[in-house]
Each structure stands twice: as C-alpha cells, then as structure tokens.
Amino acid sequence: MTKTADVTTDASKRIVTLVDNQTGKSYDFPVIGGSVGPDVVDIRDLYSDTGYFTFDPGFTSTGSCDSKITFIDGDKGILLYRGYAIEELAAHSDFLEVAFLLLNGELPTAQEKTEFEHSITNHSMLNQQIALFYRGFRRDAHPMAVMCGMVGALSAFYHDSLNINDPHQRMVASHRLIAKMPTITSWAYKYSVGQPFIYPRNDLRYAENFLHLMFATPCETYEVNPVLAKAMDQMMILHADHEQNASTTTVRLAASSGANPFACIAAGIASLWGPGHGGSNEAMLNMLKAIGSKDRVPEYIRRAKDKSDSFTLRGFGHSVYKNYDPRARIMQRICYEVLDELGVKNDPLFEIALELERIALNDDYFIKNKLYPKVDFYSGVIFNAIGIPISMFTPMFAMARTVGWISQWKEMIQEPTQKIGRPRQLYVGRTARPFIPMAQRG
Image (spheres, one colour):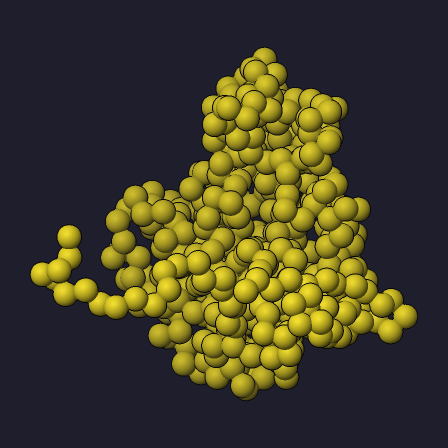
C-alpha cells in the first residue's frame, strides 16, 4: 500500500506538521533557526515516530551537523569564516592567522599568533623514514595518490597524538597536519620529477616555505619572490574551508567512527581528488589549453549551450553559489598581480579565461542558469604561471584545505551530540527469493 503525506508549516509555533494521508495521523517536528541562513526542520525522530525516512540523494537538502566555522550564502555570493568576510581576510590577514581563526574561533592576539606560528614552523619536518615511503611509488604516480598514502601513514609515526579524546593530543595532531602538508605536498612533486627532497626552513613564513620546498635545489640558493609568496598565501586563505562540501563531509563521516585525525584527513584528500571537486582546476586549465586561442571562445560557448555536444565548459556554475563566487573576484586580481610580476604579457590562457568570463556574464543562457565563474576559474592560470604543473593543482588545494578539514574534525569531536554517520537508503532491488541449486539454473 502506498503511503502519502501532506506537509504544512506553522510559523508561530515553529513546527512543521506532516500528515499521513493513509492513516490520518499527524506528526509535529520542530523548526530550528541558526544565527544566519535558512531554518531547518529537526527530523531526528522522523523514522521512530512515523516509519518514514527522507530521500535526498547527495544530501543537498539535508543538514548533517550544526557548525560555527563557515557560512555561505550562495544567492548573495557571501562567504564568512567565523563571521569574517573572505574579502577582508584575504586583504588584511595571512594564512596562519586564518588557520588560527578557523581552529579556535577568534583571531589571535599578537602573542597567540607568535606562539602558533612557532608551533607550526617547528612541526614542519617529516620523520626521515617517511622519505623512504616515497620510493615505493612509481615516478608517474599522481601526487594525490602519493598524498593519500603519506598522510594516512602519519598515524604510524605519531602515536602520541592519536587519542581523539585528549584535547592536548587533538591540538598537537592539528598543528602537525597543518605544518607537514607543505612538506608532504612538495615532496610528492620532487619525487615525480626526480629531484632531491628539500627540507623546510624555520626562517621562512608558511607560503614562502612552500615555494622554497617546491623550487629550491641543493645546487643554489632559491630566492622567494615576495609577490608570489603573497599570492600563494592569499590563495590558500581562499581555499581554507568551504562548509560541508564532499571532502569535508567525508572527513566528518570518517571521524564519526572515532578514526584518528591522520586517517580522516587522508579520506578527505581521496574525496577531493575527484574531478567534480578539487580536480576541477586541473580540468579548467586543460580546457583553456584545448580552446587554444581567444578567437575560438565563441565556438566553445556555442558548444557548451548545445545539449547534444559532449563538451562541458569548466569553471562555471557551482552547487552552492548562484551568484558570483566572491573568491573568484579575488583570484582574478591575484592573477593580474602574478602575471605582471612575472612579466607575462598577453598570456594566452589568461586572455581566453577573460574572454570566456566576459561572454558568459553577458549571455542570456549563463545568466538564466546562474552560471558564474568559480574559484578554480583563475587558480589554474596562476599556478601555471608560477611553474606548478597541472598534476599538482589538486594537491595545492588539499594543502590549503587541510586547516578547514581539521577544524571541522575538531568541532565534531567536541560536539556532545555527535554520533556515527549512518545514512539510510531507498531499496529498489529484488525482494526475498529462494536459493536455486546450480543444476536447476537455466
């Protein structure tokens, strides 16, 4: 017998009432309001009260947790970290200050910032045995595959920070992950090109140290370009967290079982690797190279609008943002600054990107479907100009996002109502049937 139900909302009592048309019974569910953003219906007792589950593929209409870390208003193009606008943080802060903010909820005092930077700097080394692990990979292994293995392996080395119920150990694990990711990331690159591993320098700031790790060699001193270092720092701020996306949800789901933080972050890296998530910046630059020249942009715009054409225009449209991604505006400015500093005149990839954006923002098809440029739209151009290969684009994303993942992990561990993740399903397979012996099978 088919079940049907009517749903009504009583704003005065802050409840949603579900009426089962089959039985005539009604059920009330409370409406919960956040500090900002849409209200939610608390359906934790839905199944026990009614016998119903909700059906929400992708969980796009489901709140899996409450959080104080990041807020997004996709319709208005707003992104806040702990209440601070991403535009202000990118303009006035630096990555480690933002990392402290995400981890602890408030911007640091001068002393707190000094102590935090000292802790991160002095955790950037890797156990020397870890260097041997890289040799087990093929030289042409994707750096994300290497990073999944390396980050997961940290739990085999740092036994003194695996107890998730100990606040001090949680703090040490958090600092270690943030500190070691530039080393792990850069070593994946160095291994792929056959260059010696470079060790971190305690006299360099976070973004400076990463550029040093990537591009220095034992042959000569590498001078870090301050403009590129600032650009890298700002780009990491833009990627530090983005609410409950696929990789963050993966981290939280892994953490809900009580898994150690290194395993949880490795799970997040694996999720980020997908072309629909962190891998989209690789796809974006590959698309720009395939277009080849500014003159061919109209042709690819037409193909993008043709439903019979398999071509997909990368870098436009976001599952959350239905307005201009605020990070993309900042990324465009960074792109100009980097290309100007490097003396790159009339960069063809940047020209193609600008022309794509110009046409798309004035085209009825893109306006109607709210297809605005994403943060990945310009990041690939910047990475390419700096000299970072395409295979390293997603690892760069993972390095920056680690602070967001670990902040979300920390918040979840401290939440008294958290429980192991266990989504339900709508089963549409065969019903119970008898086993057929081999001799009787057609």
